[in-house]
Length: 403
Ligand code: FAD
Image (cartoon, rainbow, N blue to C red; front, side, top):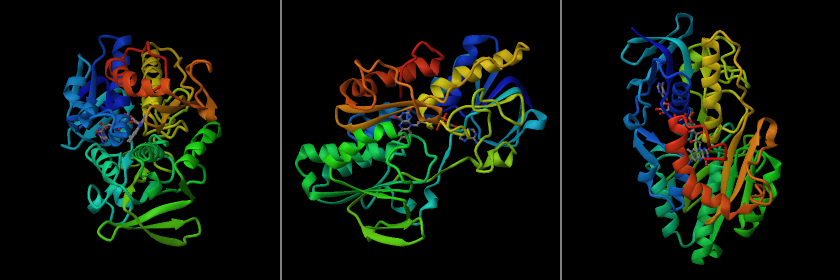
């Protein structure tokens, strides 16, 4: 099999950023990015697509054009990692050997976890901003709904971008309000969890929009089944009690799980997530195995903003170890979640491990616990360029929020 200094599993946000950051530090590294997908997505843009702000095409590029020059792209899926042999096995059976391995395959959206959902997605008023091909359908439904019941769901944690289910709701409501049909639309938010947002400091601002839009909040209610043709949905509460309700519009955030091959490779915690040291992002089981992005069992918010901070940490630590030094870089758990509470305003949540607030800007410029226009301008006009031109190129000058 081929041999590389570094093999990176996954050429998504975290994988490409880490490879680019490695090359910034050591130009001559031989790096392979392994990913079967010919398309690479800017997923934070899907909320804006569903809200009618971005065109879907601006959120996708060809993977081949984003692979940092000097890296090889192996267009294959990794089926198993043999860390004892310093090797990964590909779907075609080939093996690729590494000196260091970065595991960044993201997480798996478990659409099948909800009975009847997959077959009705994209029809019958059932949609999700969690898929590139469905986010435009969200906007189509929002534009055409004039009256009825709109339901938004949120599954159990952890999920990527924990704010995204309610972002979809606020942007939809904002449009209905502007259109003058909000009074005729009943909005219900069914949340598997027991709180609106995990970091309490942001909840008052969000609650003011819940009140403004007349949202009926339902906690510890989990979507279990959908019948699109009949326009009915079923929810289970913590005691196993099931309620059935009708809908005209249903936005689903699917349950999310770790990729099975992490557990099958003996690299996971008991819940299946890649087990790493939360500061160095090094595997707790193998010294030359590292993690980046959503796949890890770290307690940060699973966001692209987090991946942007993790990439240089992993790159620096690998280079340190290659130079016979101890890993010197530390990830503090930074993640960010720009909550699109209305068209033109965002509550810019930024925090580190333990829900400790970590605002980029001083309060006088942008108070992260309040809706601001500046944060909207960032998300709508600046962060996409920071992603394509900064993060994916290993340019680490942008220390600000995102994405
Ligand atoms: P991904 O970017 O998902 O990439 C994983 C890659 O691994 C993919 O290319 C996949 O093909 C590949 N892969 C998977 N399995 C294998 C395998 N076995 N072998 C090889 N390759 C494999 N983040 C923010 O910061 N701000 C936001 O506002 C925001 N909003 C969001 C809104 C939505 C609707 C969604 C869906 C996400 C949002 N996010 C947001 C989250 C952000 O997109 C993710 O946290 C980020 O993309 C994680 O990067 P990743 O590299 O871990 O995973």
